[in-house]
Image (cartoon, rainbow, N blue to C red):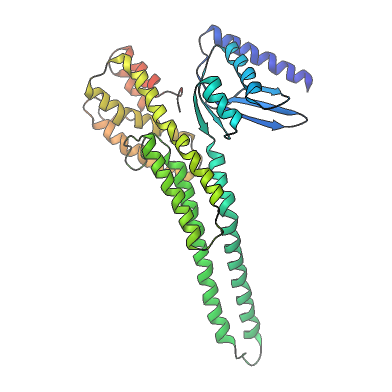
Length: 345
């Protein structure tokens, strides 16, 4: 294992050197965390490629330790961090804000996990108990029906079964609604609305996220589930930082577009046709969940129609974003590839 590790590290170092020579090192979307094996290790990864940039044994996980290790790696690579995703530990927020001077992003997994810890088990237990009660009622009815003279309480047991079936249906609907709100959370944080592909701001995304969290709490209260105010307050505090990525994304887009000095009509085409088309095409390809993928494909097909019929689109009925490279000279190719490439979220 030690020999293999040495070979892998040497290979990675050679790849990095080759990438720097050929100018292939890009901005990093960083994710930081610590893990505990035989010793505590700090881990720094580039999310856009999955490349492990840093994995070092450390004495502590303070800001000073993180800053020294990450700065050394960034200096060696000759690059910088666009934004940093973390579990909101104070040292990691400080690393982004003061050390790297970049946007600090909450880990969406942790945000959803806090909600799940608050209500998923409670709803699951209520549903499980309702199903057990229904099964017991059905077994009781079967036992009474098997007796030679019908038991006098058969009608009462039959009525109880109706009640138990209603309870099972109720908690199945609660679970379905709850999961719908969780899924909605993951579909809101895009630079475009999924329903009509219109551009969104961070404030609009934050408002929708708050509405879903409020709906989950209202659902729990309506069905008398235990209140989880501290956990949900923690979720709410992270929403503005979670939504901030949308404005950051748009700032990056228009920064890349600015050198082309586009007319208002071209800017409209980029914002309403090119960007959502390529964005949903890429996101749908990366999404594994069949339901979410289907929603994104619907958005993609809708915006494809807008793209195909727009006066600027070079070829009517063009079905693939790469055809945009035909617009104008080489700047058109850079616009379609660079502006909506994988350099950003």
